[in-house]
Amino acid sequence: MSNDRRLRRHRAVRLGAPALFVAALALLALWRVGISESPATDSAAGTSGGGSEIVGPITRLADVLAANVVGREASLDHVVVQRRVGKRAFWAAAAGRPVLAVAGEDTPLDAMASGAVVTLRGRVEAAPSLDVLREWGIDDASAWAVEDAGVYLHVREVRPAS
Picture 1 (cartoon, one colour):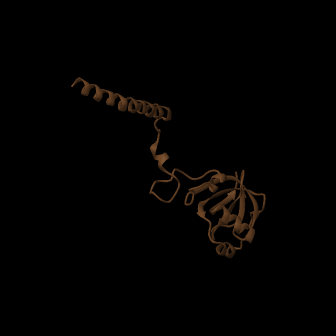
Picture 2: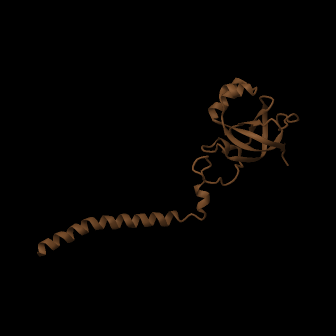
Picture 3: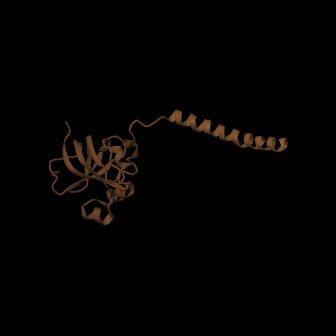
């Protein structure tokens, strides 16, 4: 009987010691990571799926080209108009890669010239087909660049930067 008891104790130690070690490592990892201050901001990924609320508008032009931003609002200050590529479209740049900005039908762009510094308000949209881009009057090189980027900025408001 004592031999049977000793075997059970040996098995418990053999299985229990690694389990305690793993539990201690898990607690250490949780302590190092900490608890999120505001879980609502961690859950919003900026995509249209999942039903989570969007944290806020994108405020940096470079973030327009990031993954999972289609459908997000953008509020961009001090953006430089690199060049016009159509009646309603222009390349916008801040720091880094330029983004195609396409103004809505009711958004005036007549007085805007290359090199102007503007504030843009709009929404990040998935890049349309090459045919649609051509219908907008966008040249082939720009259309291919937009297709490669996968997104463009649909602009509702353009005004001189203050």
